[in-house]
Image (tube, rainbow, N blue to C red; front, side, top):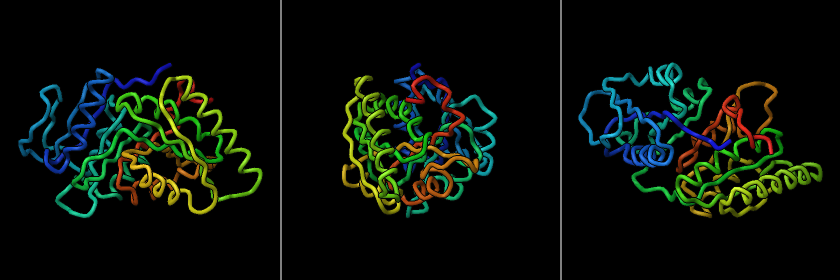
Length: 254
């Protein structure tokens, strides 16, 4: 089953500092034929596509609850990076929404420069669940006509970890190839996985990374808990965080 998005929302402050978030929402709307609900913090008049449903005077602290109570499958959050006038939420506020949500969250750092969305990074680690993000990465690659950059990472350079990640990488790459999406792959073992992914993203001039988030104690992915928080905190590109409860789709287990 292909990934579909029927309803999505985007949190906004103004059109200048949140321009990337607006443009990403519009691309997703056009591809998925989705309804876009714009949650405007305050009541400043901003330029939005006429196809967006605008709701004004939304409280920043209520964004997470509003999202969870809605039918939206994805929320786009403009995150402040550097200039406090650019963006809407702090990294800590965005991570709180990610932690408390069971749906997709796309954080978009507001850095005053356009993102190269033709390159999307997908980290694969040694956890069983790591492959489950791949259908979502494929869907977003189609939205932005992007190449997927698959990177195998682990802080363990041992034989068992190497064999496991190589097997997962082979399965993932075969699946992506079957779906007709362009990809490249590389494995980097040893060191902090978050640092490895961020460094690799910079090297390939990527414009987005896809990770998963989960707070259950039996979830062992490097990109859960504190690692996913590090990704959002330290990344200067959008991060798509997917909750495993959102992974009940075919092809999620390759």
